[in-house]
Image (cartoon, rainbow, N blue to C red; front, side):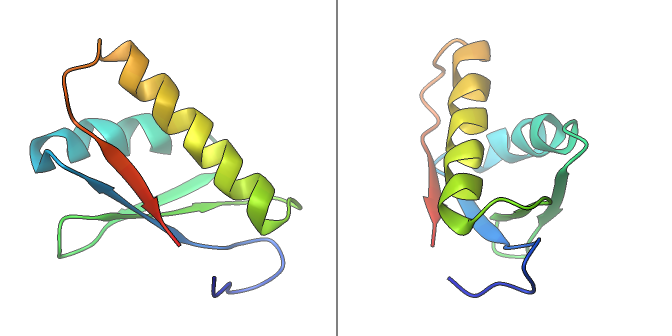
Length: 83
């Protein structure tokens, strides 16, 4: 994974339902340590700021996405993190 620096490592997030992306983007952006941008191809680029290593950042993002999925009641939109 290519990182911009020690404290920022962007990860791409893709959803099977593109209509779910705005809600997911709002949810992730509500965290003060998250920088979220929507890319032209319908994916999100997410950077978690902090002194965590890449594996810890990936785990944090994974857990946040799973919490979002549970809060939505399992509507069927599958979300994956690309390395």
